[in-house]
Each structure stands twice: as structure tokens, then as C-alpha cells.
Image (cartoon, rainbow, N blue to C red; front, side):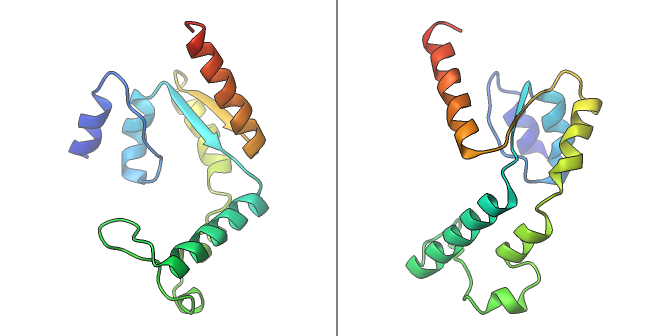
Amino acid sequence: MDDVAHLTSAPAWVTEWQYPAARPLLAERAELLVWLDFPVAVSMRRLIRRTVRRRLRREELWHGNMEPPFFTFMTDRDHIVRWGWRTRNLYKSRVPALERDFPGLCVVRLESPRAVEAWVENLQLSIASGW
């Protein structure tokens, strides 16, 4: 947690929301949470395509890790695709709870790739115009 505290003590920072133990500190110190709440079909299609591509190309993920062989989808309960399916709806209750618990946290919920593109374009225009 020291690394998270150090990161969030900087004047500006960006991180993901992956580690449950870090979430309260991140929510307390963040100004904005961008929630990509895509339909399950979009998320799963992207996850499967990315996983297959990484395995076929034997792409290194991090620290030498690689996607496991395809058969592990059937044998590993925590295979990324099975995990993605199992956890697909977790944030539908967690993010609204954050909004209640951290009223200073602005949550932007984007429900499609097109909405992300529009939001980023608006953000770029705002920055270009001096905000």
C-alpha cells in the first residue's frame, strides 16, 4: 500500500481500479473515476480476442508471464475468460456505492466504445480551449 500512497500523493495521477485493498485510498484521493461499463457482449468479445491473440503470438504480458495454453480454459477456474464472465457485473453495485461513500468523487459512466470516443474528444477540446 505504500506504493499506492506514494502514487496518490503526486499532484496528478492515473491508475486502474484492480486491487480491492487499494480502492478506498484511491477513492479518497481521486477527483474522477471513469467507469467503462460496456455491454457484456462487447467486453467478452474484446477479452476473448485479446486472450487468443496474445496466446497465438506468445506475447509477453508482464514480468515474463504469458497466456496459458487454450485447454486451461476448461481446467483453470481463474482463467482470464472465466474470471471475466464470473465478475462481469461486480461494478454495477460497487461504483454507485462509491458515489455514496465518497461524495467528492466524480464518476463518469461510459457505456459504449462510441461514448468513450465522444468523451475523450470533448476532453481534448476542453483542454485545447484552456479548460
